Image (cartoon, rainbow, N blue to C red; front, side, top):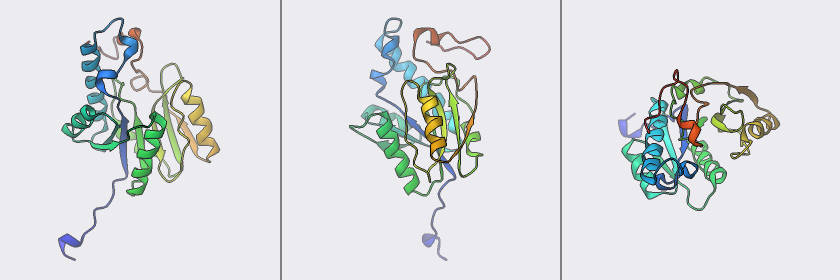
Length: 203
């Protein structure tokens, strides 16, 4: 067979990272950080998450030209999802991942300053989902899902318990992973002061 006739085999998994416009990120930090600082913080954390995906490929889900340009500079693909909320945008992105023949997607939020080793979430069964809640066991910071099963995404307040219920209802085995590093996200001013053993956030 000639080289030009060969078909590229899809990867086993991809990391999907939703990112809103950096200039609009982290408004709840506005009392303690200037807009330019919030912009830099959002870029720094997003870079950490993208780097934590290696060697897996990354798809950034966005509707911001600035984020799309930044993503390509990072070597990430872009899923352009204008006019959709977070759940709608991620659902559309996962449909594209499934259509590309990629059997697993690891959804990771972009505000995880201590993100590391996202590749480990590929080592799951075909009908298994892994959920990493935030440290308050409220939100869903990382979720590894098989793309062969449509999950009703439930991001927002209380998403951890809703995602677990939705996955069980779809007949999936749910593995909850408590991970201190991935469980630390940044929403409120106090989140900028993690315990010393995690490290520091330089903003």
